[in-house]
Picture 1 (cartoon, one colour):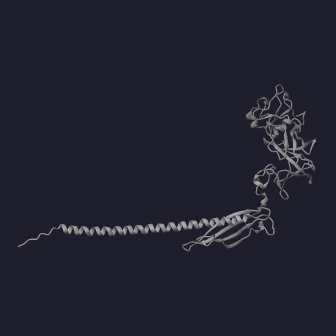
Picture 2 (cartoon, rainbow, N blue to C red; picture 1 turned 180 degrees about the horizontal axis):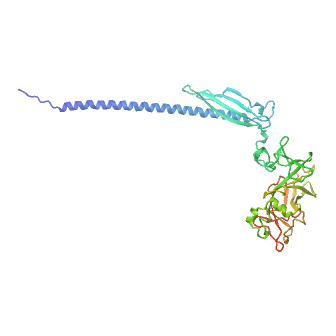
Picture 3 (cartoon, helix red, strand yellow; picture 1 turned 45 degrees about the vertical axis):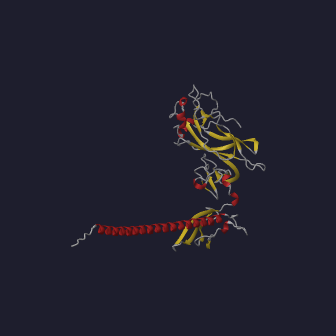
Length: 398
């Protein structure tokens, strides 16, 4: 009898070969799924990149439409030219550039048009529409405003402004008094504080801040004038009974009221004026009229004043100026310019702007011309203006 012995090792090798095939097939399936995912991501990236390119192109076309609107050459209708009146709604227009992968339609719309007054501009929108590769409708929309400004003034930002460089609240020059009321057209009217009698009112140009007319009891006289304004503060007893002890800190924040200053005056009237010459007539000395807040019953510590300086122009000087200084009075009798004076009944005027006492070649309104009033002395010794924040106001004639 012959015995044949079979080894189990052959079956193990066959089983091993079968397992390797299954592993290979599974690996192929996994790799295929990964490749499909990569292909999907690549397709998405391509689609997004294409849409981004189209959107950038649409924004460029919208901006081009806006700039075309801004290239008008006149604010009024001019035959054969693109003017402000030509800024009107239009479209949709085909504005597809060469080699574009979509068709772009641009629509420009005037949303609101202000009159030639306020505000003189047109509010606009530009819409660019197209269809992307997926067949979805896309659009971009830009908004802007086109001002009704003559192109010749395009460089006006580099030109020094006339008056205040910026329009202030209420649409008028910052140096026009707060109490002014709107007038006719681009003007304001203000009636300064004044004693009983004829009433003087001032008419201002809102842009320049200059006085264009002076009215007395409703009768107006045209002419150019400037306003000089500021505040008076007082360091008078009982808050400051010792004029020799007026320090810098006291000068910066004196507590005497207008009523206390009035009591110190004891019936004497505080006067102010502007002693000046006009550039068109430098040989003639003139006096600008000043108005002061009432002192009786006034418990405020800041006393506002308003001075009117008339400008006298001639044919050779269309833009006159003035040179001069603020004067206090009556002098003698109330105000002293003598640094050696020791009288406790006289006032010394100290200027809060010690750099200059004379205003030279002034062409615009002056504000914040502030002064401190204090007793000239205690009857024995003299008082001095606090040197760090003020200077004795001795305005020489210009």
